[in-house]
Figure: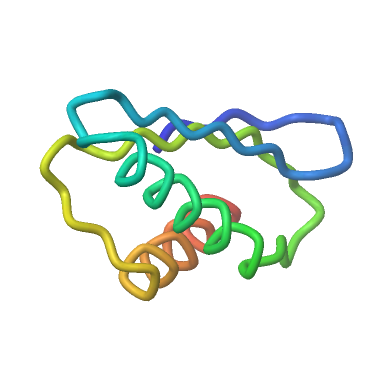
Length: 79
């Protein structure tokens, strides 16, 4: 994950999933998992970020696993 602070008043998300991750169905599944995990983890501070998520090829990602990782990452970045 890469991030930079923004002054837009809200978090923004970019998800890069290349063809190495499989067919369109698998790529879209990864993007849905990332978007939903970020949506369910609201910003608990007034610092807003532009976040770019680029999963590694061959990574099996479950919603709960990514959601917890994102929550912990977000807490460490904003503190």
